Amino acid sequence: MRPEPWILITVTILLAILFQTFSTAKSAYEADRIVNLPGQPAEISFRQYAGFITIDEKQHRALFYYFVEAETEPASKPLVLWLNGVVGFVGPGCSSIGAGAFCEHGPFKPSGDLLLINEYSWNKEANMLYLESPAGVGFSYSSNKSFYNSVTDEITARDNLAFLTKWFTKFPEYKNRDFFITGESYGGHYVPQLAQLVIESNMKFNLKGIAIGNPLLEFNTDFNSRAGFFWSHGLISDSTYEMFTSVCNYSQIRRQIQNGSLNHICSQVNRQVSGEVSQFINTYDVTLDVCLSTVFSQSKMLDKLQDREEIDVCVEDETAKYLNRKDVQEALHAQLVGVTGWTVCSRVVSYEMQNLEVPTIHILGSIAKSGIRVLVYSGDQDSVIPLIGTRMLVNGLAKELGLKTSVPYRVWLEGRQVGGWTQVYGDILSFATIRGASHEAPFSQPKRSLVLFNSFLAGKALPQP
Ligand SMILES: *[C@@H]1O[C@H](CO)[C@@H](O)[C@H](O)[C@H]1NC(C)=O
Ligand SMILES: *[C@@H]1O[C@H](CO)[C@@H](O)[C@H](O)[C@H]1NC(C)=O
Ligand SMILES: *[C@@H]1O[C@H](CO)[C@@H](O)[C@H](O)[C@H]1NC(C)=O
Image (cartoon, rainbow, N blue to C red; front, side, top):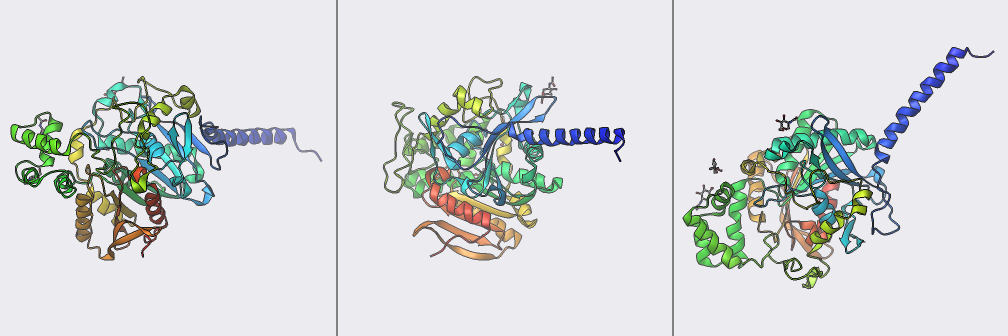
């Protein structure tokens, strides 16, 4: 008995539709697969992807991402989103790929024509997703340029959520994976604001925790801890410290500079402080040598200090050179839209500076209350967002939430040395310092940062003596 011809035809059509759907879904992300990054080692065990995700079809706004699968067993490792911000006077708007991936904890560090293996890459523990956000940062763009005129926290969070939704559609096998949102600096705004949107939006992303390093959480506390930090590190004198805390403080100075109107008395204090600190100090790490190559030559400078002899302090220059290569941009499926070059910090985005004053510490509280782990950590050599203010804010938040200390302030170890100090409140909120680390902690203390990252993902206590 032969089947009716119409059945055969129907089945064939159905199969064709199924196949079509399946293969387009597959090619959706296969098209973003990076075959080979110029200069990378020949044999690597993990897959890499990069490309644009359009988040506004009408306005042609698209965000660029770089996704690195875990080195081993990616299917059993969590997914981690990383967001850089940077709190400069020009405002937030630095690239998570330039800073996070290629200077801090990605698998490679550019050096000349080559990509060197980063032994302490975070993709040893997780599938790492680096996002250039908001539009106007790195390769991310808006074809309607008026978008750049006033970018706010609200817009950034909304666009980041739109990105995530589309990214998970593209990579469906990650949708139910344990998911963490992490970042640093102005990420103190981006990370909790996005996490809150994810929670409120009822998206079924499996958000398990957030981690933020040297984050801007509360304008006055964060910036006014600079005086004590400078003074205790010997960068300013007793009398200057006195002026800096009683005559005009740093939050006042910042406000006035952002407003474009530094008054006479604050201008005097500012000059006194800057003069003593000098321009030869990297305020993002007061113990790290400054990058002299931009001043003298393009030669690579290695910091020869005892336990950090392998830090290339000029790695950001190398990254900019690398990401501006045509062959690199092709390999990444990137292109420059409306700008002439890739820069680590945006030259087109005009960020709403008033947003810097919006406190985000309470958002951390509501995230913790909804059962999502919160880790706040500080590279302890950073004077831009010093640990002093951050520790005070987290401690205050714990009190407010009525969280009891579950791990009293103590050292944690990396190998047999102290990696920093930590305190845990009620198993949901933790604070940790990273000893000898800069504002971009994984850049200057990669090994210690990886230990911290690992225990955060696992939800385990940091190693103790
Ligand atoms: C461009 O963007 C601005 C601000 O986001 C908006 O007001 C304007 O309508 C947009 N222009 C077009 C042509 O869509
Ligand atoms: C420092 O700044 C804060 C916030 O702007 C202000 O309220 C405070 O009075 C200032 N303190 C001193 C000692 O100037
Ligand atoms: C200056 O800053 C203050 C506080 O941040 C703000 O309220 C005020 O509107 C600003 N003034 C100007 C002229 O921008």
